[in-house]
Structures are given as C-alpha cells and as structure tokens.
Amino acid sequence: MKPAQNFREFCQYYSGKVLEIHERYFPEAEEQKFEGDARELVKAECQKRWEKYLKQKAYTLSAFETTQVIPGKKTGKNHALDCYVELLHNDRPIARAFGEAKNYKLIVEHLDDFSSWLDDLEFNPSPSASENTPPDLAFMLAPLCSERLKRKLELQNIEFIQADKVIDKKSTPSLTSTTSTIEKIIETKSTLSSDTKSSTAININTANEAELITAFKGTGVKKTTIQKILNNRKTNPYRDLLHIVSDLKFSDNVKAKLQEKLDNGEISFSD
Image (cartoon, rainbow, N blue to C red):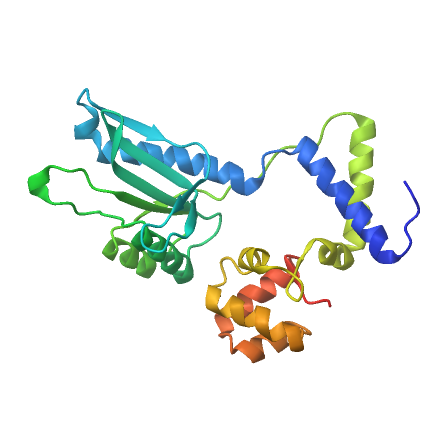
C-alpha cells in the first residue's frame, strides 16, 4: 500500500478495498437477489393468468432472467424493467408482462413512475374480447403496500405481489486471514464513515445527468427538475440539502427521501 497524500485519499483507498472484497466474496447484491426472486413470482403469475393459452400447443412463455431495457413506443426513451415476460404464439410475442420490484414499502411515486412507463410502452390490459387476444399484465412487488395504494394499483390494472424483504445472510469466507482482513477494513470504514461515504456518493454539484437520475431515483424528482439543477449549479453550487430544497421548493416528502440518501452516503454536496 502506498502512503496516502491526504485524508481523503486514505478514505478513498479503504472504501475501494471494501468494494473489492464485496465484489469478490459477495457477488450477488441484495437488490439483485430480490429481483431474482421477483422474476420467479412474476413468471408464476403469468403462467396462471395466461394458462388457457399455454395449454395450447402453439403458445409458449418467454421469461427474461435479467433486467430488460425496452424503448418506449411514444417517447423512444429506454425503460429498465426488473421483470419482463412475453407470451409467444408460434414464436411471435402477442402479450407482455411488466414488473417492478422494490425491497421496501411502495409509495405513490413508485406507482407514478411505473404508470408513466406502462403508458409509454402502450400497456394493453384489456384487449378486445372479439379478437381473443390475451391481455398484457403488470405487477409491482414489495414487502409492504398500503391498502389505499393497492386500490390505486387495481384501478390502473397493476397487480400487487407481496414479497418478503430480502436480507443477505451470506457469511464471510472461513479463511482466518481473509476474515481478519475484512474485519480490519470494515472497522476502519466504520470509524471513518462520513468521509468514506462522501468518496463514493454521487456529488450533486459535479455529477452528469445520468448520474443525477440515479441519485434521485425513488424520490419523485422529475427529469425537468434535474435539468434545473444542472443549470442552477453552474453559477450557484448547492451547499447542502437545505439549499437545494429551498431553491427548488421540494416538498417535505422529497426532502425526507433526500435526507435518507444523504445519511446513507448515496449523495453529497461537496464542491
């Protein structure tokens, strides 16, 4: 290990080592594992809902095992779907199933985003009965969902599937030397938590548009607002959370979500 020139480099070095060890020994991230379970749940629901077609010889089910990026038919924008299944007739897609999975309680903003995607993808849950065409399906999966939000989902022909929150229970490798190394790095990371987080956080003042979209995912902040951030920060970089909330007149709900991201080290406001 080369000596760090300053404290920031020291933090960046150790946070990088923690990530290297995580990628080596814990390759399946918690959210990826949850999405994997979600895909199996969506596939099972599709088999039930399209059962009468699948009993016929010409029909087959095509379930994708990874996130699928599909361009919208109206806007051309790409939408990354956690779960995607197609019903094929003689190898030609005739119905689709779209799914979004969250590892925490669903909120209205999740539904709003997913609904806009479905509209762009021309989701068709009620085809003409005379055509004997199977319906498109849509699912949202999460550990929790309020009754009020469930009713909103139903009104938009989106089905809620309850899926237990996934917690990665994998233990560290048994080799004493490796375990010792991990413990030391984690201990160092813990004592320097705030500085380590800042080295891996998305900087609101320097991130590009794609990174900002990732940073604000799940907060309800729209792309038009992100464009404002890109323009405003050129002359007046954001000092802290209060500054950006005040400047863009964010709601208390958005402020709370951004505070959580800030606390978790997902975003920062350093110059």
